[in-house]
Length: 539
Image (cartoon, rainbow, N blue to C red; front, side, top):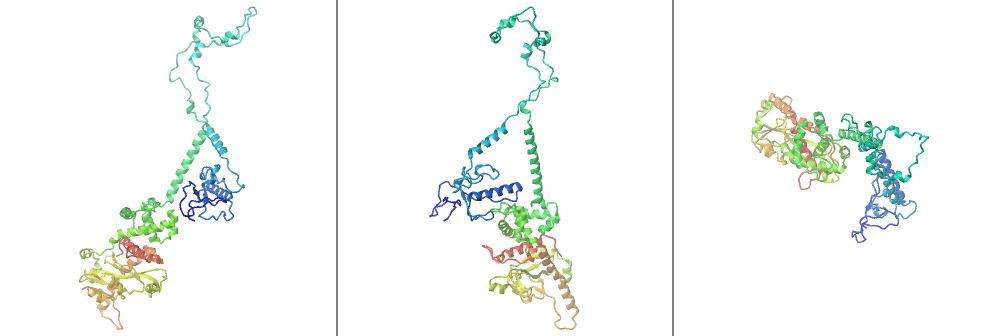
């Protein structure tokens, strides 16, 4: 039956009826609390006790502390307020389910008692401090007007001769009339009302509302200590968090994590990629983290699980972020791998190429291979097995200019494919102009193909059994080998800079992307070559 079900014994609450229709009965369903172990000892002990209390209240034999089915829920009928309380309120009646449990082992919690506790605690906290009495404060003005000399406050024995009758209590209670006030003799001058003191002599006591009790001072100190601790923890967390502060001002760190030479170049790359990075379901990662995550995976070949730990997100989020950012980087960086015009090529031609072959050298070609996992398909195994590497590989044709810049990269071919076939089918020959010279290795038997484009290929010759070679047959192969070595250096730098190409690529990266004629590995190789062009040339 679809929907949620209550796991408490003898409780038949469900979210859907037997026909799969949702019940609008207002009943909610809640998961069993988890044991939180990474937020401090206090939270760990509290959540552990709460999980034990829930399991004791449910009392299911198939439930243990370490194992509870993910689909099990507790409905709102077992709580006073219709839902569990906050996990830190251990005294709350709804900290654990206590209603309609089907047994008497757990006593029903008392809501009224909890409310009385809260009321007493609130009254205690809101009780105002007792007003302070200042013993040195001057008496009020009316006290000076009606006060008597000090001698009148002293009890003196009555004269022996005169025994006057004491007034009755009624006479004490009778208030004097205004005429009686006028008949009273005036007070001496020293007891009459004095003029007010100057402002500098008056020291009025502080009002009662400004005086803090000991409890308020203690609470203020505790709050200040907590704020200071929170500030220190945030500062410590920023040191371990992967953000802009990790790379700013440290080019060595930038080079280690990204392969780029400095932070300014990384910022330029980030600025160009940010408008196209739609976070979508990856809101936990900023554009900076998306680009850094992708470069760290290419540069250091870090596993998805390790990256999820470093960036504090789920491994599924890391995988989605890598593939999404890789697609954006391929679309934006692909123009960096382009074939230059003849004028641009001649402007910056290195002198060693000019001395050996003039200004006609247009390209140096070679192939490199990337190891892959063993395919499950028999035909795919036959197509990807390389006799040279004795392993399953994907082969790529790479072309560099005499300046050391990568100008052409093909899509992946099976390791069994010959270099000649890749050269003829990749579209490389269409970029040659009449009179161009191509430097290649002995395995590239492409003289006829290049000759059809009115170009020439230079390949080191072999002795073919001759005991002695002529001088020109020795000098030219030596020059070809000396200059053609640059493409091998570029391939070695690409492999060493991006260790992902050194690893064994999983088979799922050989599947063509949706709506494209490229695989994820093809995009990775192209992005690595584009990033290589952003760095200093090896020539």
